[in-house]
Length: 278
Image 1 (cartoon, rainbow, N blue to C red):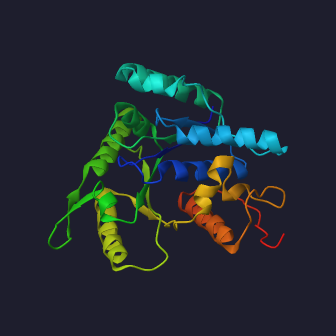
Image 2: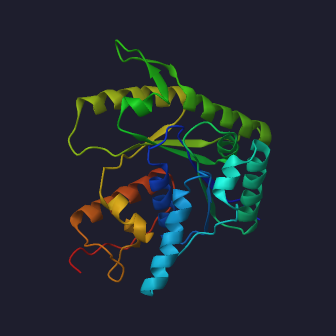
């Protein structure tokens, strides 16, 4: 059986946009004809899982049909969050095994903010890690330490060390040639160019060479990424028949952003053109 491609959305800082990015990657894959399983390890909140529950409810209420991912049963998230580490990891491993046994093309795992044992277990399973970070040195602090006087890069920081550990565990388990592709994406970019962004990009370029990640295309701070969430929809789902909000040129631009991200991930994505005038 062909092994699924495992994508982990990871960043130890909360509020970086992991779940938002996750749902867009999943729907992009689904529209490209890929079969996808999702595992939501943000046990208390489970925003990604709730998004696809919203999707099923909205589609049923409006008589539409769109592709859905497979969701393995992990039980009650709040109860699992209170369980001991061994039970959490065992539950994750069962869910992962169930997803792999279905023969899906991809398994996408959304991880919580913070350093947890179950998140580390997921990272060690990854073929690809996608790390969203806000356009700020506050978020960069988890990737690299900078000098407070000169802003020069000093050394990798805690999350970079976590990814290095995941790579080491994967090499031990699968051989020294096994690797994890790591893509860092700057999120919620402001429209105006800022001096702070230039400084941040320079440090990211240096750190990328040092710890081995690629820098993906940035995503603008767009309302559309948030306003479709209650319906369980993304810009990839919009069509002449499905448009619960008015479509504008900004939505076309958002769709292109997501296409650029999928291309940077090395994943095929086929989206039909979005007709603004229809």
